[in-house]
Image 1 (cartoon, rainbow, N blue to C red):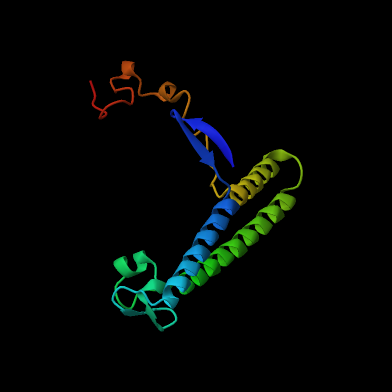
Image 2: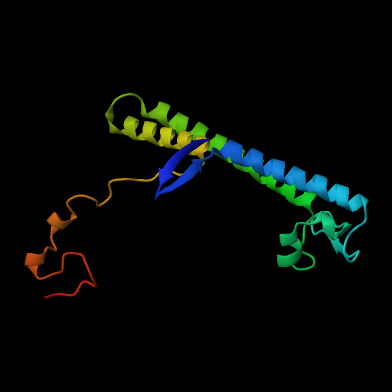
Length: 169
């Protein structure tokens, strides 16, 4: 975890693995709390809800507040089912990313050495590896930045210089 200064505030940079680990800890902590509270039978109204995934009637303490509040009956899932669905989704996403990286590596090998195609393939592979590590998609820089005013449309040609609503003189 690194700290950096942004707009007079100290912000923390956290990697994707650390964020996933923190989420897993929070889910397991909430499960432990619900198991403890479920054993004492202190549910407010003793109300049972049916889980849409496992079809079991469970106490309200075994559901997240968001599931109970925002989802209607028949769409609510218990904490265990939500956890297993998140894990399955993460596993499927990891397999997809692995397949993409294999494809990018093959593309780089196929492009060979030298020339613009090999550089472009190597850049795509590096961007894919960076996205896999950080979870951030690459940003394409340099499109239409410098010298836009030189390609016409300047103030001397009867057209506004790209500011405002594009009215003509």
